[in-house]
Every structure is written in C-alpha cells, then in structure tokens.
Image (cartoon, rainbow, N blue to C red; front, top):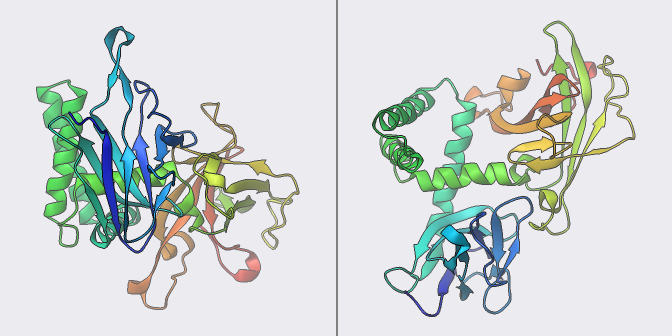
Length: 341
C-alpha cells in the first residue's frame, strides 16, 4: 500500500476539470480534502494546491485518505476510490475511474479529449434510449439486461453478482451496436447518474422555462410555469447546484389563449431525478422529471421540415396537484395553433 495516498491527475482537455469522489454511509471524511455535494454521497475534491479545478494542460495531485468503518465500528484506511473527472462549470462527466493502492501507488490519471468525446457519445446513447423506445436498439438492450438478471437470479441471490452481470451484459450489448462499440457500462452508467444527480441538462446548461399542460383526453389545460434560473457560478454544495427553480400555477387553467401565472412561487428541488416541492415526503404535491423525446412526438410539430432532422429535446413530465403534466419549452396557446397533445 502506498504511503503517500496521493494521486496525480493530468488535464489534457480544453476544459478545466472538477473531480468528484464517491462516499458512503460507511465512510467518514477524506481528511478535509473535499466539499460535500448537496444531497449526494459525493465530494468535490480539492487539489494539494487548494483548488477545486485543474486548468487545461496542467497536472495536480489529490490526497485520497478516506476512513472506512468496518465491523465493530473499527475504522481503517480505504484502499479503493471511485472518481469522476468532470468539466468544471457544470460537472459534466468526462471520465470515470475506480482506483486502488492495494498493489502499489495510485496510478497516474490522464483525462483526454478522447475521453470527453466518448462520454458525449454515451450521453447520446442515453438520450436515444429514451427517445426511440420502440426501436430495435432499445428492445435488444432491454432483452440483454433481462437475460442477465434472470440468469444471475437463478444461480445466485448475491446482489454484487447481479450488478456485475448487468455491467457485463451492457458492455457486451454495446459491442454489438453500430455506433456505440467503444462504449462500456461505465460510461453509460456515469451519464445516467449525472442526469439523475444534477438538473443542468434539463435546464439546457443555461436558464430555461417549461410551460406545463395537462389533458383528460378531451380538454387540455394550462397548469403552470417552471422557471430555471442559472446562477452566476454553479455551486454543487447548494441545492440544484445553485439554480433557482420555481413553479407558478396558472391563473386560469381552462383559458388556452393565455399563459398568465400567479405571483406565488413554489420552490422546486432536484432530488434523485425529480423536481419536487418537498424532499421530505414520499409523494410530493409537485413532482416532475426530465425526459428526452423528438419534438414532433410531443407537439406534433417537427423542428425541421425534414423529418430526419427532427431534434431530440428535453421535456418535463409528472404530476402537479393531481394533474398529469407535460412541460414544453414554448407556450402552446390557441393563437400559436399548436397542441401539446
């Protein structure tokens, strides 16, 4: 085991790098070397020079010194660490690595532009899985996961074995695809976790509004407005990464000629993939989640005259005061001659 507990990370990308360290209930602190991420079992690591980011074309060292709590409440120095190397401003993942110093010093890590592009491809895969739910890609992926889970369950009740089986099945399936052969479970799982952990992708990495509509199959109603306001600087130690996210209810839900909303603002918190008005209850009054779909699938109007150029866009879906809602990034008034349903 290494005596230094230091790991060297080189930034060979065009972006500054932020490093997240995974923690757990069985881990104490990392020797005051990290800032807790709000509502998550993660820390933003500080370099040995005291910075939370690594500038492009430079290297820094991190101290990895978590204490793990084992049987009998005995604490020992952890030897395995999960690290996510992310783009500095919105913590977009670029590389995930599990490192260990059991067999020697921690290996040096180099984060490259190729790593970043690979994670971007994983992001496209995750979005396409949601968007093209009836495609052969999705069906084959679901079949591969189902088979892995079924076979593992039949042979073992061990949860770890099931996780390993899912990891192997995902990686094996990706190798059979035409566009994602170089991806593995690691990249896909990292992107999926990022979408659940932070609201940034649903805000378009800027400020964004969603107009909420519902329908009973006969009549549509305007339910309200969700506003996501980008902070001057994203701060992962704060709820929503510092974003201000509010819900305002419609003044007259049945009047589709207007999108006027009440002055009262209800704060929403992004919690495990859901925008909720209360994180302490099982069923919040307002609960919305982000989804990806083609624009034409949700509005009946393509982003382009050419159907092949139709864009994958983020939407919101969920329940607000009992009304099942769809959130779109533009108002759908009668004057616009559009319908979200």
